[in-house]
Amino acid sequence: MARERATALLVDFDGVVRRFDPAVAAGVEQRYGLAEGVLTEIAMQWGRLQPVLTGQVSHADWMTSVADALAEPVGSPERARAAVEEWQTYRGEIDAEVLGFVREARAAGIRVGLATNATDRLDDDLAALDLTDEFDAVVSSYRLGVNKPAKEYFQAACQALATPPDRVLFTDDEDWSVRGARVAGLSAHRWTGPGDLRYLRAALAY
Image 1 (cartoon, rainbow, N blue to C red):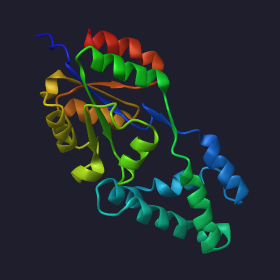
Image 2 (image 1 turned 30 degrees about the horizontal axis):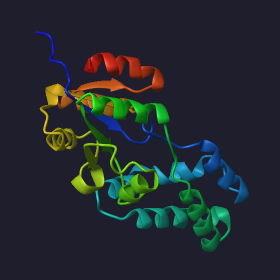
Image 3 (image 1 turned 45 degrees about the vertical axis):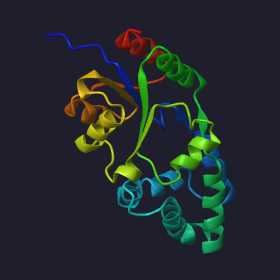
Image 4 (image 1 turned 90 degrees about the horizontal axis):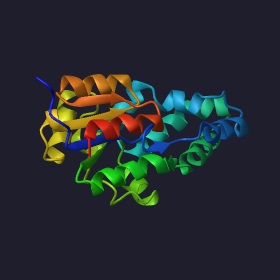
């Protein structure tokens, strides 16, 4: 039996709606004498990252732990804190083409939710990037206490959209999130760039 057309859309934040220019972090690392990529490498260590994504620690605490790990290679705790603060000042850029698609879908009657593994800084980021009113629902791992790709995360996301899983289409740049969404009963597409918008429009058929 053919699957019914999706009537709601879930989009990932970082990697789909928001992009980070890697040159920004590289510039900070260069100025502070750090190896290229070390800021992201330390921040994304799962033992450090998972607690902040599930509401166990704050974004500020997370960044403090990153600075603590950098104190020796950068020369002092003060320089480490300065490097992390400078890096964190940059909050990324919005893909205008993706945002246009979100607006287009909502105008056509598709409910659109932002599905993100996020910290307690999410609301501030959405406000700073003028995204506060761009989604019908914002589903944050920090608030749920569970992160993608857990089945419970996607169940909560579908509830936030008031749409059953088999009528929700999800897109994310991480394959493990896509697989998790499919296990939870959603349709899911691995995001590779704005060229995927043609497929998403066809799948939603609005």
